[in-house]
Image 1 (tube, rainbow over the protein chains, first blue to last red):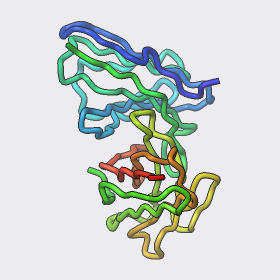
Image 2: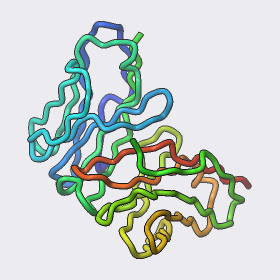
Image 3: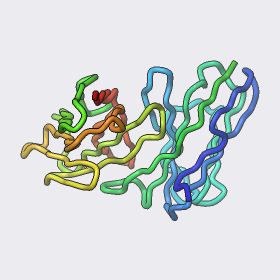
Image 4: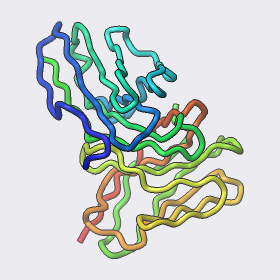
Length: 115
Length: 109
């Protein structure tokens, strides 16, 4: 009965490959997010979707493409992986659009290593 | 950029109260203060949030000064499992959570 789940937990791949990370939430929330935590431990928001609509799109290379097939899922596809993409990626969800008291709940993370 | 300033690290003895300060001098009137913690690269865990009044839940208490320029998270009886990085966040518009460097709390036996 995990609230926000991500697969895979670890992902090791070669430069230039294309990979996807999947996120699912069973909380009935309307909004989902992707965050990136780099080697210096800074957590930064990348995207958010509300009911399958993109509402936050930070300055992220267009090699990163989020896809939301339904409001319970938000996948992150990364093309032409680079060394600098190595990081831990966290998915999160919130009930509404994330304003005011709308709390975000995070998944366990996916550690991506690009060789 | 994060709108908060926190000490990079703190120590606390097990069983004692841990008081984690946060400065947010540029906070706007309708912006909430949120606290999360991250235990050893796990996903950030929500702790508590507040606007003006002090708040308490089963995990912690949040004390916000009257001018709202600073706040303190209180873990009343710290345990070894409370060792983590604690993030104080001012929720800005658009639903973003902007994380700063946080405070690395070490609870020692």
